[in-house]
Image (cartoon, rainbow, N blue to C red):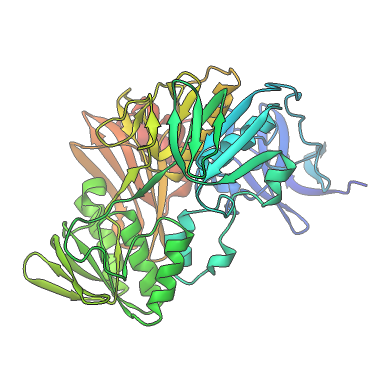
Length: 515
């Protein structure tokens, strides 16, 4: 039996503004959906973010933290990284009191089954993009065969946690979050094959595996991700020179740090700074070696990069500027030789100097100069073959320019869009690139995509991780970098493809303009 309780006054719920409420111990978010009041779970299924601090735009509720999107009519998930809908609860009015029931409403039924019966879809890769594609196919009625192929035996897991959480010691490796419970694959009749692909023949729609098996497909998703780039310098093959791309890499690093408290990290990107902060949290001596005195300056600009540098230095990370000449050591690495005469002592070296798409097995599809696969705005690479995530060089909705974006959320969005297009939806890319990084206890967000800029306008204090920075080109905002302004960035995200001017962007973020 449903028990109703008063949770708010009607006048408290404004159009376009989510409102937090509680029913007993249950956290809720209340919405005014064109005069109809709705109540949903108040926390995002992905990371428990408070949805009342998010934004409502064009019929969507946008999570403040990682920008998952939900339908405000039904609670359906519209964009990852959340992989589940919001539960909706019954609402009724008694005078000006808003009463919400404690029993969820029945979930809306999905598409009827039977679509694609007899067809075979191959998901080449077993990461986030493929997982979301598989879920989307089944949720939308695909009843044919689905085969997911990847080299790791573990079900798809949250790789972003490796550098942010696992290396910090905040979560054991055996508790690394799975994107879906292992039972999901059996429950949804998804065949998982643990193997590497040796050849994908796009002309004949055929996939060959290292064990000699071969499969044909009616449609396929290429989502094999990327591998860490190696440094071509003496000593690069010494034990103790390590990459970080998967669980095994993280396990090797964790095993090594017990006997090697001096760590060097080579690179100036997101993995580098996340790993530096995480390993420093364990009390290790960490030196970050980068060709730039301000890591991330080429993406964030000097002022924001300087703020991140300050946060890391304040935690005890040491910085060395230069290019790696060699790794030293006999049976195991014991140091790094850097231009400028620097010698960095280290019993473990993490090389994080970029990644390369895993596409060398493709036949019948041309690569671009980075190794990516150029796709249409529907993610189509060849007849029946779609590409997603790190391997896909796709047009940006804001500019039409091609870009290969190595972001977790983008990969998941690609997987969803590709799956829907396999089912004949004829959808085009409209996503706004978005990622987040976690450094020294602070979360930084990046919306949009900007390779260059005329100016970066910073409001706030990057050193305190409380700021918004507008990346401006020709008077328009191409990207936004922010920390501590989750609601503002959630409001702006849906508008980034219009390339708003500075005044408009500020008005949307402040709530002075409808969003």
